[in-house]
Length: 249
DNA sequence: TAGGCCATCTGGTCCT
DNA sequence: AGGACCAGATGGCCTA
Image 1 (tube, rainbow, N blue to C red):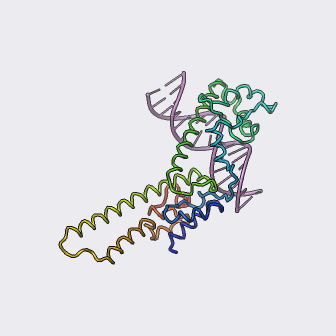
Image 2: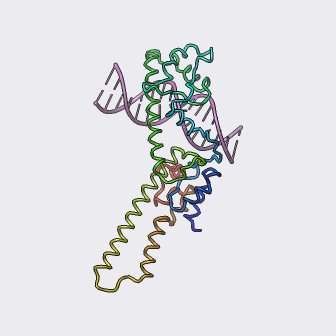
Image 3: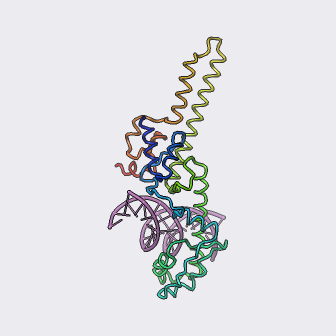
């Protein structure tokens, strides 16, 4: 097992144990190159993983909106909060978390902070921001759906940062594979145009095999050893999102 | 218990 | 003025 291959399996260890075997089965032809710290460190999937649960609640409109009014201490904000529970789409704004604790402090802390701003305006701004973040999450879900990793209920959803890093590396890999393919086609065309003998079967096999090899493990050079997170395994350059590389003086 | 991830609130800035 | 975007702060949930 070469270095890159080891890294692939190393990354695979970030996914849930239940889905690890499944992921290992796909890891050979995909580009799992997420720094370990960005991988999911959780190894159990109960069917109610937090992210999935929240998304389900969001799209299915089935979650229970949090209600600050449950706590008498927060009566002041609870009246306005009712208008904050649903945005203009009619979608519930709360999550499945503890309804009375999460936003309570924040709301309370905001009271009187900016008296100039009418409460209704603030609530509408909050709802808008919430909607914006939901749209962003929807887009991230869309991205997750098209990048190769184990799409299985037994595998926890990729984190946001892992999704972005994986997508970036996947794009770079596709570009490189395309480039390799073009070169191969050019090589074959060249051989056809020449009157001389065609490349030997062994040479062709060698070329094809090196193509396949580089398509999967294009970078096995020193860059891998440079970063403990192996952020450059597929890109050849350290990721700007790699904390380790960015922390370097 | 610490660390990772996340949703939400908030105030600031920029644009239309 | 209102909306979009952004980053910081806060606190909850989960796992090792």
